[in-house]
Image (cartoon, rainbow, N blue to C red; front, side, top):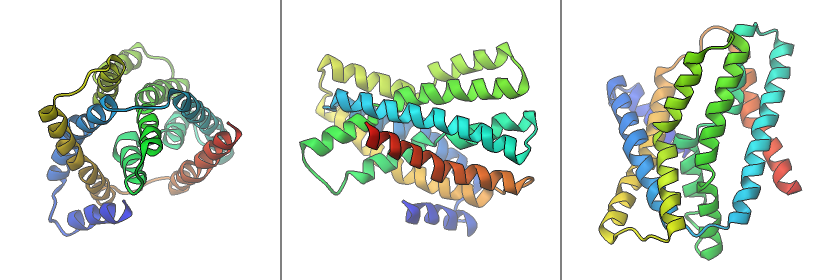
Length: 243
């Protein structure tokens, strides 16, 4: 994954990929590729629903723990109220689509067997609930820092009902629960498009790292990054061991 991200950075840094090309690849990946992958994988899933419950509890617990730690850190760093919500969101909100999905898919690729397939299916079923959790929590922390706004709440509702990841998860889960089998042609077509999506997602991440610049309060950005990649995984690991 790091190699493919670095490839995206290099292609953009050398001008092989333009910023416009990155935006277009990003759109194709987010609106077509990743939803195709989720529908195909979840529709044919045979998850352990008991495991899904435990995984969801860990994810929710780590998210809530991350929010609390981020507020404490923001207070210690002296962030103004207008910046606190953005900082907190940067700490707890993970990149489910472009990083989470490749992690889940590639982590299980080298191992075969029914238990492994069930574990992967259980992990994929978390994406729908986490999309809802992240969006609601993001709006709550932003409203808390900037004041209320009906427009932001309406934007949340619209964002949820039009989110391609959430729609794909719901569609795939509905097919799985109904016991419906995708026609072979459709199943293989969705799988082919989904396989395209994962490397493209990582290339887009790398390209974005090349075109983005950290400006302003670098100390705040570094603190948020450390909390995201160290504190949240630690909380998740502790909760997982406890369960």
